Length: 471
Image (cartoon, rainbow, N blue to C red; front, side, top):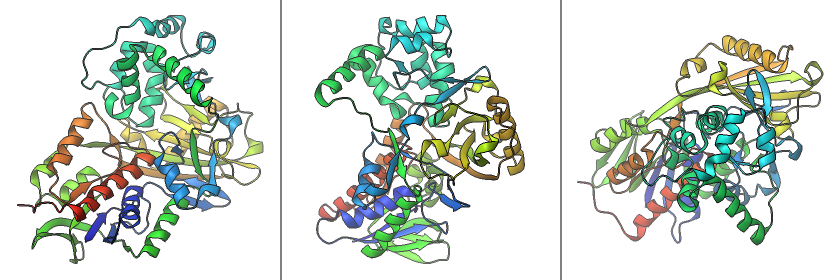
């Protein structure tokens, strides 16, 4: 059996790995094709002047097990590190200054009275409204709604504007009033459905968890000592040993049918014949590949949207900075009127990110409705970010290093109704053709790995039950 995987980001790498590793008997012949000259997609770790710089994601969520399990399977367990315990707190900007996020929050759900009451993040009216969440009747409809509508309904407008917007919306670089609740934070919908109240639901589940397993104190996020690029390098190394054909720098022009098989047409005219194809490219890029093969599928894929963002990595001498509170960084609500959407203090967050006497930060701009900020020239972006950091934190020093990495139309947007659109796409895929990646069932690193694994399992199932031919 021959299988072609299109796209060498983490989803494609995971799919190719699973195709060879998880095949019960005879593993298929796997070819992995990537348009760029390097592997990893949005995972891009740079080592320069003693700094470990992440151009894309810098960690993965432990609660979703697929990334952690893959690291262990690849022998990387000794390389795993978590967020430093003394720096797990983070902040929100309120009226131009940093305010710590109240302790005891589950996502945006308050579960401890004292931290909420004493927090300067909310007005008294806002605090009372959040506390009254236990009396808000649950929504009876089971269809999708926006994160903004959900939070406003259950916790009030202030909770949305000052907390949920920058936190939940910020995770996806999206407008919370367009962001699908069921596709991004289904646990919140489940709490309301099962317990009638978010607060009652979180407290009930914590009691159950503490009585059964004890309180967990580990880091919610993990990464690798040398950056997430280590995961990419390990996967590529295993794929080479497994005999997977790796084709970097090869762009796919189209996918069509020839003699009852798939023909993957490369830009240089070569054909890769396959019994199954896994496309991990963004939806609109995939739509162009299948326009002739499956026009209905292509039309559905064109409906998916994405936004642009930029990561600005800044290095400073430690002795040139003012004293800052312990923490891993801060988020900025839209109402603050800044270009910044947030900033991670990377060398606080993880060990080994900066050489002695230096610090490394990652600032973020762009997102839905703010794409223009991400497209400004490098020098203008760095200047604007430094100006805003000076106003917020009193940073007057010039950065010793400044690198800008843009991700144009690269952040998938999960708008209301997203899961329905995904189901339509999957139903429209011809037999033996599969889509996977961050645009469908989760945008985080663990979600992408799971997506690649799932696509591989479905492709391998063809060996047992061959699908009908495409008409």
